[in-house]
Every structure is written in C-alpha cells, then in structure tokens.
Length: 272
Image (cartoon, rainbow, N blue to C red; front, side, top):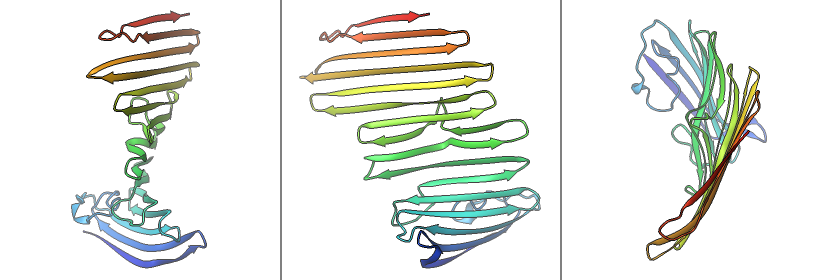
C-alpha cells in the first residue's frame, strides 16, 4: 500500500519574507515500494511495488516567489527503512501555472552505500525562440565504493543545450577518476529565400592524471546563394589538435571554391 496527502495553502503564506511563500505541504506513507515511489506528482497507482518488507515516510512542500511566476519549487524528502533517503525536487521557471513535474526535475539519493543525483528538463520562452535543455542522463553525480563521477553534459552526448534566435550552444564538463574533460560547441544558421549562412565552432580539453593534456578546436563557415534551383557557395573549415606529453600538434584546413555545378575543395594538413 501507498498513500499521499497534500494541503493546498492557496495564495500562500510567508515562508522567508519577502522572497518566498509556502504554497503546499505534503506527506506520504508506503509499504513495500521503491524509494523513488514519490518522485513524480502523477498517480500512485502507476507505481510498481517492491516486496522487501520496508516502509516509506515522505514529507514535502512547495515554495516560490510571492508572484508565483518567477520561480516555484517542490521538494519531497523520502526515507526508506533499512535502505536510505532520497530528495526529489521539481521546479517551474517563468510559469503562471504549475502543473505536472515542472520544467526541471531532479533528485539526490543515498542508498545501498552510494550517493547519486541527477537533474533534467527543458525550459522554453516564446515557443522555441529561446530554450534551455538538459536531456535525461546528461547531469548526474555518483559516489560509490568502486567509482565516482560528476557530469554536467557528456562529450559523446547527451550535452547541455541552449538556443537563442539563430544560435545553438552545447557544452559538457566531466570529472571522474580517469580525467577532467570540458568543452562544447556553437552552431548558427541564418536562412532566407535566396540562400543561407551557416557555421560552427567546437572545442574540447581533457586533462589526465598520467600527466597528460589534450585539446582540440574545429570550426567552419559556409554561405550559399541560390536561384532557379542552382546554388553557388563557398566555405572554409579548419581544425587543430594538440597534446602533451609528448608534445604533438596537428592541423588541417579546407577551402571550398565557388564554381557552379562543381564546388571543388582545396585542403592542407600540418603536423609537428
């Protein structure tokens, strides 16, 4: 069995005046259910039981700015007997109506001798004119007896993403026992009826305990003009990779020549 009760405080009561109001108080109990049973505001009937003889005790609240628009956040603390504790949170940013599980969802958990956490979600403004996206699995932390990591995006994806008008930005920061890795990229695209302009820039840095360091950067730009189903374009791209120790450097560059129906490329490579 499992149950949850919520007391709605309407317009809210002062919690940390003048910055925060208290809007809801929650409590829950459960028997033979997993520690993450209260992670969602959805119906509890969808939660599958876990027969292990344990009990769940949950207490939570909803707080936010007095205008109930700038920021509102839920926090639920769940304790599972004989197992551990977990904090689930949900946040709404620039939203007049707080429904579902919010723009962003996350958790912090200590169970089975390890500490874990994560956050994911998406916030958009004016449709998709501007948005911020944290895909599931991109931001996680883990501290256990055999391994640990702190990830805010991953080099091979998923990454943290930000979009603003014609610009797309992605990034990552990874720290674990093997290395510190950080980097990201920028993409932009501007199109019209007679052509388009596009470009990208990608950078990355990795520091290993050997000691060793590696870095790379790559970028490119392309423009095209089209008429009567015929496009003429030119572009340039370049990249460089550097590492030490031992010291090594490689670079390449390509130029696309604007010749109709052909657009040949001229490339060169360098290394030391």
